[in-house]
Amino acid sequence: MEELKKKGIRLTLDAEKLIEEKKIPDEELLQLEKKFITIEDVSLILKKKEEAASEELSYQAQKVSEIKESEPSPIESSISDEPSPSMQEEKPTHAVSGLPSFHPLAKEYSAKIEIREKLDVTGNSRTKGEVEDFVAYFRNRFERLSAMLRAYPGKYTEADLSSMKSLLQQKVRVIVFVSEIRTTKNGNLMLEVEDLTGNFKVILSQKDERVFENAKKIVRDDTIAIEGKVLEAFIIAEDFEWPDIPLAREPKESPHDLAAVYLSDLHFGSRHFLDEYFNRFVEWINGKSANPELAGRVKYIFVAGDLVDGIGIYPEQEKDLVVSDIFKQYSMFSDFVDQLPDYIEVIVSPGNHDAVRRAEPMPALPDEVFRGDVIKVGSPSVVSIDGFEHLFYHGTSADSWISTLSNLNYNHPEKVMEECLKRRHLSPMFGGNAIVPEKLDYMVIERVPDIVHFGHVHKNGYSNYRGTLIINSGTFQDTTDFQQKQGHVPTPAKVPLYEFKGKRLRTLDFTR
Ligand SMILES: [Fe+2]
Ligand SMILES: [Fe+2]
Image (cartoon, rainbow, N blue to C red; front, side, top):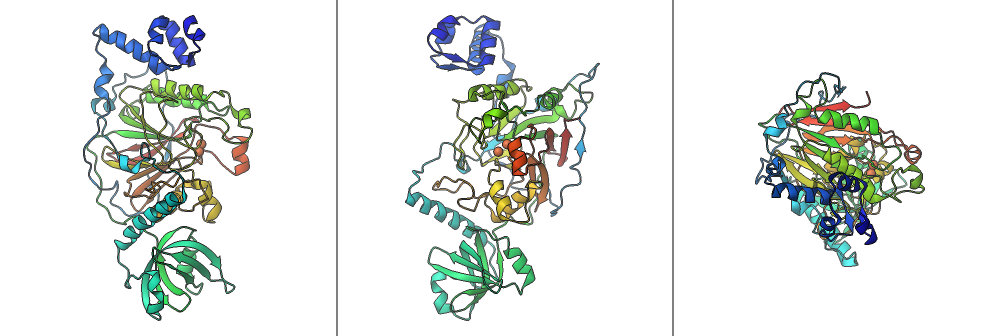
């Protein structure tokens, strides 16, 4: 490798190891014409050599197959806001001597993955961040959320805010954007609202306890429908609603008994990364356990962001790092992917610790930081998996949600996602969470998901909201001092697994 070093070409540790092991000459590596050589590049050279020798590569046949259309229906027909009773924690059977042979069912089926590319900012970012981009961004959001509200007509006729003066004493329905929220000296709520025609004020009186309690959850920049009586200076609201997801949907069926594993917040490179527990998971997924049947049904692994710990993410982070080179951190993630059975499809979306722009929506991780045999999507992104519509989002907005609404906290991240689904928006409060004003607001929840997968708060949390399964997948990182100060209570090494046919969510505990 002398020649490479002379030319200033860098190598990942695992690439260097493999080059030495396989005795690949410098000339072959120089032909790559790359400044940074990863294990994938080396593997590619080896693969080509094998092909030349006419050896068949079995995994080629198992490449991603994208299905054309999936049935638009949910996971459960039952309308329940309670977590499914089958979400109990389980201790996976660990490696023992005299292991049974491993015949994974998931190897028998090809993957069915369809990425909804129009709902993913990856490759679609067009903004310059100028004033007109912000105008277009808010307009796009308002128009799409208004259309959702309009799909279910209210009691009264809809009116524009510009026509309020001509509708005095009448009862109307208005669809508005909330620009400000205040408490009046009488203790009522006063909203400053606007639509595309003008602005007005709305009073929500504390005399109606049910509506008032609900109204305390209205946040700045919410889009809502309000019904009430028009007075000279304001509307006295009788009721209001968020766009929300529908209550009733057809049940979704899966013909194959396959399963998916939901991961997030691995934080490779962190001093607090829990190797021992993670290695147990890797052994388990490879069928090295007394009862490998369940592991053998895992066809998909999703990672909803924070694959690595990154660098310079928070003050004095270097104290928490064992690997402070971002490329090496991603190479640790690639090593993990390499250890997975070939028949498993891995889908990754980025988080705030990853090497993409910090503001949302975040595009997929670029090939320059790592390649690996994975499918990369943005955050948020929408992907149909075996006909089940998945919404992947890192969950960065959870911080601003939790600091804004008193009913939310870090111990129940699933409640945060319920608020998002209710609003059909992942991060409505502008300024609470950094947002890039794209012409299409990618944070709008356009399609009703069957499963929402998110992370970021490092705490497992699940719920079934109007038939949509919410999964927060915890972490494989132990508590850092920073998290302790922030009030985080992580639940590391607890891995959610969902069985599509049986519609069962389990949590596998790798700490035991
Ligand atoms: Fe994280
Ligand atoms: Fe995060």
